Every structure is written in structure tokens, then in C-alpha cells.
Image 1 (cartoon, rainbow, N blue to C red):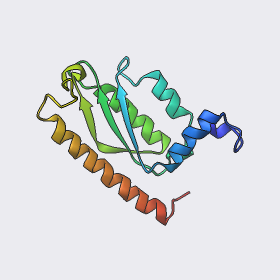
Image 2 (spheres, helix red, strand yellow; image 1 turned 45 degrees about the vertical axis):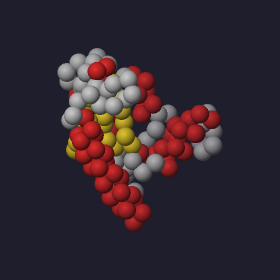
Image 3 (cartoon, rainbow, N blue to C red; image 1 turned 45 degrees about the horizontal axis):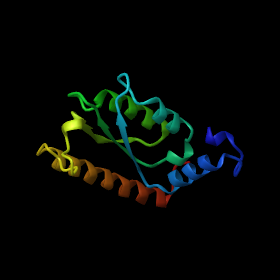
Length: 141
């Protein structure tokens, strides 16, 4: 884990990711569904960092080939993100039938995709700005 290294001693790629995370105001996590949960690579990445997430909101977009849009993975991910210190906003963006959800030019084929995505992003931006305002005033620890 990144926190186990002395400052400046972590591998270069890990330092670079940590810097990106420190500079981020919020995290939009996009996940597929893997055995009713998140892919192992995503879990591994998330687990390597901790303080870089504190007091920053997250949002979850999930997808699957089936009808559920990855919600089983999203629900599991919500608990993980909260434990890591980046609570998820209340809305999620499940994208079912991902192979048919967009045409070849990446235009949505379902009339609900664009408005639901915009609503989700508007909420995410609101939380990101609110948390940033509070972080600028100081954090509890």
C-alpha cells in the first residue's frame, strides 16, 4: 500500500497516481460487474491508497451486458468507498445492456440515458463543490 512507503520512496507509478488523487476534488468511479461485485483490478487500485481519498465525494457509474446495469457491483462499491473515506453520492448511474446503449457514433440509443446521466453529473458536481468548500475551511483531522 502507498501509505506504507516513506515519503518519496514509493514506486514512480504509485507516486504519480497518488499525486493525481491528492489533486482531485472528487472521484467518479466507473465499474463493470464481475461475479456480482467490482473487478479485482479496481479493488486492488482502491486499496493501495487511503488519505488521498479523505473528505472527497465519489459517484458510481456501473454497466453490464444484462438488465441490471451493474447495480450489484455498485452497491458493493458504495460500501468500499465509504470505508475508504470518500462517501458516494446518493444517486448511481447504472447502464444496462451496454453493448446496445450507444450507436457507432456513441450517441445514446435510449431516450432516458442522456437526461439521467446529466442529473447524475449535476448532483456529483454539486457534492464535489460542497466538499471542496468545506475542505478549504479545514477538515476534522
